[in-house]
Length: 334
Image 1 (cartoon, rainbow, N blue to C red):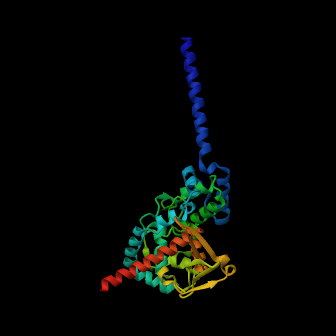
Image 2: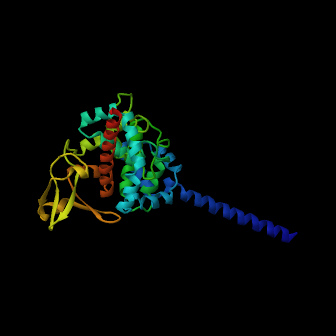
Image 3: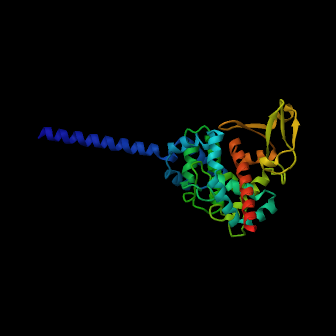
């Protein structure tokens, strides 16, 4: 009997200790108990007058997801140019882009006139970001941003700032922060605006009650055009021109200020190397390299995504969209 009592007491002590340790572990894992999260909450209360109890309740429902941090460290922009181009400047993406352009041609024309940004660039940007609305992201933005802001990501400070902007955006737009979906990096809607860009560049281009970058294509198109314009887009100016190497000098076409096809670029003018050095870019292909002279509008595209690969892909996709659409119209007219 004493042996049974002893065993019973042992198991009671064991499970009580285990339960206490497990409960303690759960308390430690609550998001709002982390020191850096506590600091962030206090700053939001002091700086922006949020209610502390509401923020604590919000963060208590979140967990850091290591997969978010690891995925954001290896984006597509780390791939080679030939691989990147095959993904984003594909025949399928061009075909889908032409269909999208035809469907929303009126609002695209309006945006082009209003902001001076070519419809081809707007469509190409949407194609790059979400495949014309097919892949806007299905992850809760608050979870993604919090995981990146308070995890081990090297750009944690950037994501903490975007988390701050996201909470302000949710309050301003009267949105439930738990319900907003986006990418693994916290980008929102069809144009994949980070929260700071949403707050500063999104426009009500369709004239509806509120700005909606997830479902309202008028707002999406107008907001992308506004983003480029506010970041310095120069209307009717070149983006990039292909360059050839000959006789030790860079040669490129100056015959047209707008993006034109390789076959049209025939009136080459020799330019001394030192005059193009700061603006010459090399993109390595499968068999040889592409040399491009880039202009300010190329840098403006990079404000959307800081990768040279991204900006070149937007530019090349925009050309093929424009050329393909014009070719189809000619066929239809004959």
